[in-house]
Length: 252
Image (cartoon, rainbow, N blue to C red; front, side, top):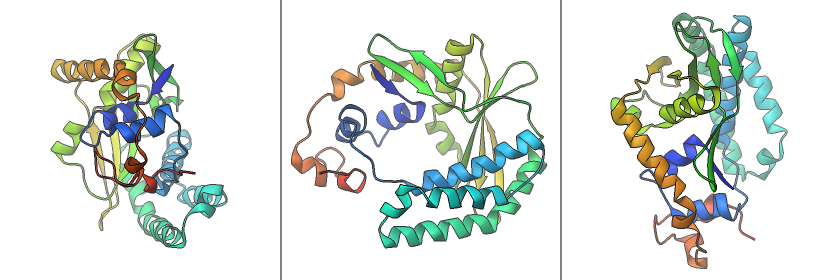
């Protein structure tokens, strides 16, 4: 059975959709090259988790997580220029992190967390399922609230938010897995010169749900749509998106 995450569905059928990339990621399961941006985000999430569990701000958790990540194989596989970039990002984030975390504490009361990284699953048909792990499910005033923590180099605009359907997908998955509707919020830590926090509540409208249902219908046809063998030329210069896929995948 083919399994997709909410973010994979968003990117697969969005403006960056590429059947060759899809083939290597989900059908051929080609080994991906490391993405250090994700790992830095994970370190920030650990700090936020600690705050909601204990009520305390502990920026040192960030560096402890980073040091553990740097011991992993992915860091040793990076070329020297990528290691330098990674280290610059670590230092830049550390300089802004304490301000960001204390600003987060000001704007976001300590939540009563029901679960962290809980598996949600929605079966589309006999061939395709969506599986996701939202950062948090917390108690809300009237119903549970799903929260996704993000870091960003600039504030999200209305246009940025409108393109993101991950929230609605999680809400539908929660209803399918937990048997009840939930609210959804993005908590965005913006790493600008003056760090700030965006709390973005996603209104679940019928129009957005109709768009999502259409997207899910496409996902259900994903196997038929993308099950093909790319040519050797596609690896270096994709005939669909023009990208050099050897930058993202290890090819023997």
